Length: 276
Image (cartoon, rainbow, N blue to C red; front, top):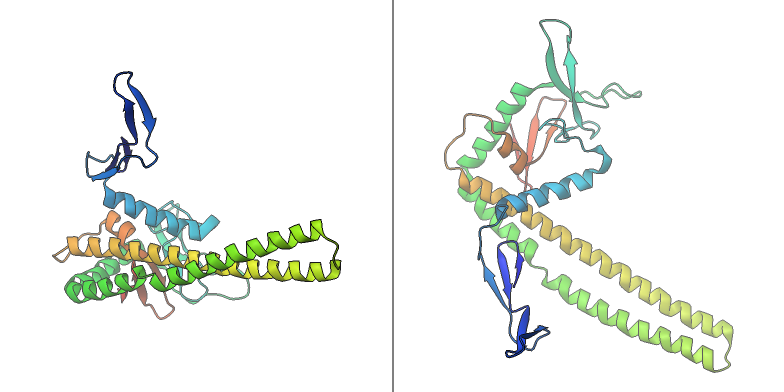
């Protein structure tokens, strides 16, 4: 028996000699079964999915990610695209205050016009944006279901991938035959090189396309998973919220973008954009 998350795979091994108690690894001789939710998982499956989505988001940010605050690496400048960072005003006086502004605001010749933000204002505007979601949750959830269905339908990608894999297999065989013929019979090396290079070019083109399709499929699945997490968080909340929730901010928000005209646009997981 083998466990995966809260799943169990039964009959990984089976007994071939009951008298001598001899066991053998199951290589298809007897059926195997998945048993769902056979035991209490260490990590809640929904929580695990959210962590994986956040991990992928941070990986895309590369070295730019900062986790010093829940607002770090979440707020973007609408002028230059840089992150907003925390700055301390009047650090040695009773008027000390933390503000958030574009990290590139005063770097170089260009000065971003986006305003600084106070944490209280960010929280209040996030609440306003999320409550707009709750007010229109039925319509938004239906739109998300349609989008998620579209994202998870990879039949066209799978069909093209199957054709490319067949092309790769054929070209591999032709290349091997070409090499063997050149090794066992005298022939023009110029013609051999030209034929060999043409097979290599065909292989590389098919391989590159297949790799791109695999990446596209993975990205579509990641977006569908993110949308699923967003739908779950939204469906959990039926009433208007009045207090800022750190966990809600981290799990449902993709980013917030500040613009020079004062707008703060929240982009929620799944691509929903709402002004706060």
